[in-house]
Length: 428
Image 1 (cartoon, rainbow, N blue to C red):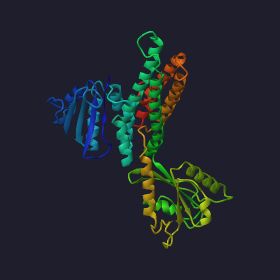
Image 2 (cartoon, rainbow, N blue to C red; image 1 turned 90 degrees about the horizontal axis):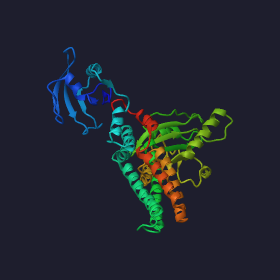
Image 3 (cartoon, one colour; image 1 turned 180 degrees about the vertical axis):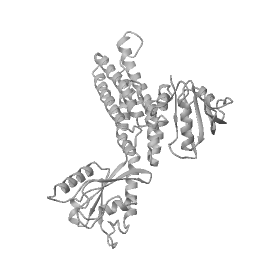
Image 4 (spheres, rainbow, N blue to C red; image 1 turned 120 degrees about the horizontal axis):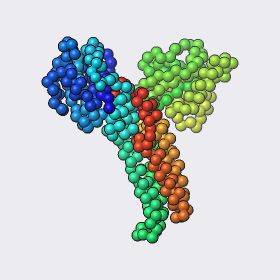
């Protein structure tokens, strides 16, 4: 196994930068740069000296002996002053040491996975934690990183293995002292896990939204102040505003933190009949995005327009351009009237949705659970047909277990790992 090194903190000027070394020659690499030897687990200050005797920096050095490190290998961390020149000098010296090489993206985390310090769901949780921008994203990522998804998957698997074992015992040892009819216990187990997986599938839709951001689409007729409202909510001039109707042709997206929840605001073309081909495309896109949105802010200036989106519970209807404050349900991006109430409505709506959030955060999680559920339902139906079908029922349970194993990486997931680690920074 190679010994790898990389800058573990962000690139650029900083107070402190950390260079991480992991592998069998980590201690040798440290000894090539400093002396005397650094004891394991005790922070020590050492002068870092180049091969030619040049003084590089004064660093705080930490040693971790395997398996008590992030990667599960011998690890050295060099906490140096965060000068670009200092970091480059340290990396240059390390690259000249035999058996050392610069780490690939995510390679430290990959080694933690290979040494069973993380499962694949925890790796995904770590990636999401690094990318988190809001409090809801941080909390959700920590749930996955702490092992909640892995623990739940293991529970499902253990129960299904128990059910399959009962069936197989009936098949293989029919004359021995085992229950003659295990169908009730087996169907009880399957029913419990079926309901649990179904609940998690439903919650995963919300969890995916937390990870990617809830979408709020602002729609309405042209020239009602949709772009002005977007700018007011975003706190900056994100969209061009004009008194000319139809200024906005395409969908404009703005990311923001709304009470700790990630939200993408979308300004859209004004909805109207038009002979302009380009504007018509914009109107079509506006309607498409509205159909997929988590919330629609519908601006109107005529009660006749209220029939639009009738019966859609995702819609918040607001009278537009209420610059005089005459309408209790009005809103104006110019004056700020109604903005606070709108933010409160959206915050409450998404807060209510978060009560049902699941642990599974990615589309691949949901697809795996849906596939496992299909085989689980098949097994339940087959077992109820009687002992002569038990062998097929047991196989359906085994398939369900194998599918669930992909959630935490018990099966070959090499291509998936390549995709996950490609999003990591080099020093992680």
